[in-house]
Amino acid sequence: MRKAIARLLLYPCVFVLSSIVIAGWPSCAASAQFAQLAATPPMGWNSWNHFAEKVTDADVRAAADAMVASGMRDAGYVYVNVDDTWEGERDAQGNIHSNSKFPDMKALADYVHSKGLKFGIYSSPGPKTCAGFEGSYGHEEQDAQTYADWGVDFLKYDLCGLRTIMDLYDPAQNPRKASAIMRDAYAKMHRALVKTGRPIVYSICQYGVDSVWEWGEDVGGNLWRTTDDISDSYRSMALIGFSQAGLERYTKPGHWNDPDMLEVGNGGMNADQYRTQMSLWAMLAAPLLAGNDLSKMDDSTRSILMNKEVIAVDQDRLGAQGYRLGPPQVWARNLADGAKAVAVFNFVTDDVPQPVTVRLKDLGFSEPVHARDLWTHKDVGLIRDSYTVTPPEGGVVMLRLWK
Ligand code: GLA
Image (tube, rainbow, N blue to C red; front, side, top):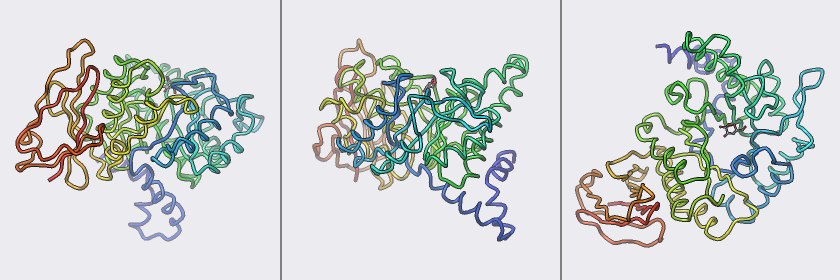
């Protein structure tokens, strides 16, 4: 019931339509556009994992250029997202301006759009962002309108600074009050984004606090981070990725669990381990936001980020997140055409590669299936009963199975 009321408040259009009040039409049109946002997990690039606080306007333009030149745009990567540290001061009217690293945000958004790409930005519901820059607290509608005026298509809204406000209520003593402040802050920015009339993908970033997957949709999130920050190590990536088991019931088109951005190409893992991240994220129906320097990609990085068969699994229109079949790490994902993706991982780094047998009956197939290896790009032939693979250390074998 509480969920239904929350939805009613967030989507007045539904209520308006059922009351047949014609005056409500403009907001209905906006909500209809929002409903189509992120129908598949968003794909693109974000500045944080590689550039962090050093990112500049020139880096973002170079990323947009490389996204087109490398073929990434045509493979589905469309969002070019500036993370934290673009923010400057507010003027006397309270309008936010970018800092000297970003001389003209509107011009940057126009440049990104001119390449057939979409433009994303970052803020916090708190007074300050994680990196200590200006947040949106108390300026939500004003900032949303500024973003819309600049041509922003994606907002990552990162909790950090709001904790100073939540702490005023001593979360240890008043956990519900602190949580309510957080949820209200996320819902508030969602309403502000809707009010602009511009479809802006809303990316909630609060590291999974209070099981955000249970309420992220109610506060308007198209995606919500489920964990703390990823780093460019196999340990970090694997801990985050494999811990997503069980969250599959919270994902559906328009609303995605977000296990954080890709590290592929940043140098801290080998190619097998990066193939593991790409495969696991595709099995999880996770947003695919590359986090490397796109202007300096080697062939291995390109081939991993642009594996179209793996991307097709990630972007499958059914939007059903994969689930763990069982030990050691065999994952399966139902696809729209009745096929299934299956990924067999060699999870532990110091493990010797071992054969793993996947039985068709465990996957729900009662008859033989065709199989294709999505990394070697070869048909494997007909599987009658079971199939045994030996993923390399830290690596994966990923298959598509169909009747
Ligand atoms: C948090 C987020 C990161 C990044 C930084 C920026 O740590 O989780 O993804 O946005 O803030 O300061």
